[in-house]
Length: 427
Image (cartoon, rainbow, N blue to C red; front, side, top):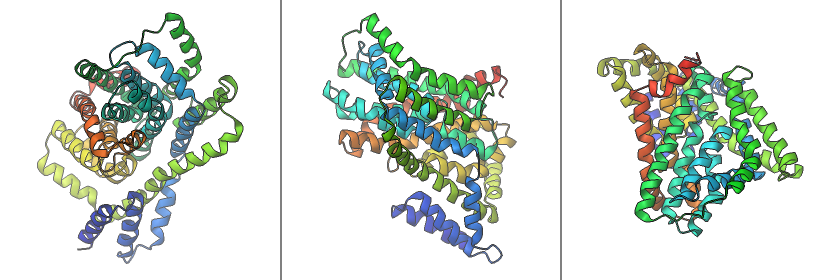
C-alpha cells in the first residue's frame, strides 16, 4: 500500500508542475519516514554522499567553459566560420547551425548551453534572411541535442559515475553516432531546402574562409585537446573540464580580447544557477535510490525482464521506448540516476556492455530535450523566436526522426558506433 501511495504522490506532484528535483526529494523523505528502522537523516546523508564525487565536478566546469565561450563571443566566431563553409548551398544557415552545434558540443557537453548560445545568434539571422520560424526553431533545438552525444558529454560523465563504465569509452563511443546524427540532419535540411526554397548566401572567397579559420583555430582546437587528453589518459574528465574553462577564459581575455575580468562574477553566478539544477536532482535521486533499494525495485524489474524478454535486441527496444517516455517529463541526469541501477544488472546478464547501454540511453534521453512538456532546448529556442511550443514542435519533428534512426542503428548494430573505442583498446 505504501508503494502505491508513493507512486501516486509522484504522479500527482509531476502533474501539478512541481520541479522534478523537489518531487524526488519529497517522495524520498516521505517514503523513508514510513520505514521504522531507517532514520529520516538517511535522506540527507544520501544526498550529500550522492554529490561526494570528483567526477561530478566536471558538470559545473563544462557549463562554465560553455558560458565563457558564449560571453566571450567565441561561439559567434565559430558561427561565422561555419556560415563561410556552408552558406553558399541551399539552406546554408541551417547547415551552419548544425555544424556549429557539432563543434560546440566538443567543448560544452551541454545541449542547453548550445541552444542558448547558438540560438541567440542564428534564430534571428535565419528569420531575417527568409526562413520561417518553425524551421529556424526546429533545426536549432534539434541540432543542440548533439551536445550531449559528441564528447565531452555531461550525462555520460554522470552515467560513468553511476555504473563505473569507462568515461573514455563512452566519449569515443558517442563520437561516431553524434557525427552521424549531424550528417542525417544536414540531409533533412537539404531535402527541406529544395522543397521550401531555403535562402543561400554568396559563396565566400577562399581568402575569407582562410581568415575565419585562423581566427577560429584556438576555439576549434579545444575539443581535440579535451577528448584527446581524456582518451590518452593524460587527464581525467574533471581535469579536462577545468582545463577547458581556463583555456576558454585565457583565449577570450588575451587572444580574442572579447571578455573582461569584471564579467566573470556574472558568468560564475549563471554557471552556479545552471549547475545547481542538475546537481540538486542528482542529490535527491541518490536518496530515492535508498527507498527503491528497500522495496527491491531492481529484483522486480529483473523478474519482469526474465519473464518477458529473452534477447538483447528486444531488451534494447524496451529500454529505448521506456526512456523516450521518461524523457518527455524528466531531465537525463535524474532519469539515469533513478533507473540505471535497476536496468543495468539485467543488461549485463544479456551480454550488453555498460558502454553500449550508456550511449543508447544518453541518445534516447537527448530526444527529451526537444519533446514537450519538458523539452528544455525546445522551450529555449521557441522563446528566442517568440513562437508557441505547438508550432515549434512541428518544426522539430523531421529532425527527431533523424535522431531516432541513429538510435536504432546504434542499438541494433553496436559495431557501427563502437569500432573506434574497440580499435583504441577502450572496450
